[in-house]
Length: 111
Length: 116
Image 1 (cartoon, chains in turn green, orange):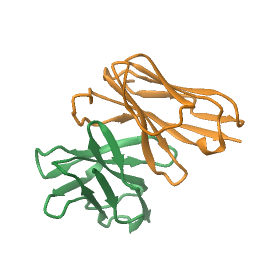
Image 2 (image 1 turned 90 degrees about the horizontal axis):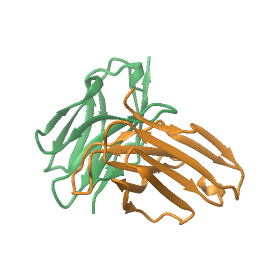
Image 3 (image 1 turned 120 degrees about the horizontal axis):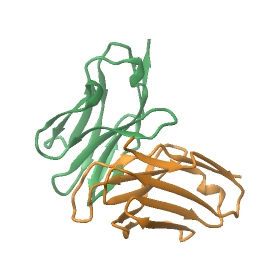
């Protein structure tokens, strides 16, 4: 069965320091994976997607994620956090068009 | 603006009432979805329609009835509202998913439903 596990429910970083949000997936075949961001009281915005074309995926706002099949991971990174990055982040796997969401990671950014 | 829109943004109602949430997309997509986000921010799919045809129906009480008058609209009607229905409901759309494709989905701003 398809599933994703986000390893941290909350991550706190200082502005200007790197961001790492961890996600492991479970899939019986090559998955389609996504990261979505939800700012407070807003809808979900697609950050990036992996669909087997390249293992390192670049997204919007300086985010990127690396697909590692051997580790079944799809961690989200950003070299330097901005205050505006504070939000909830969801790792998502797609199964026949149905998005299966992880539990979410709340990212806090301290000045 | 091209987008997925939902109305209303906020909905406060009493137990036992019937209410509807409307969703429209002008992205030219064939598939639309309803998701529910609970108080712990967990998101779960409820329904999906492809070209007005129901293709995904998760284990949702039959008090919830989606209706798709055309492929640009997917409305959600809820009968006999209960306290546990309080949540944020998101509409989304994508290119055709019925063939097994896994296209990205574009989400509306959400409707916060509060049942008192």
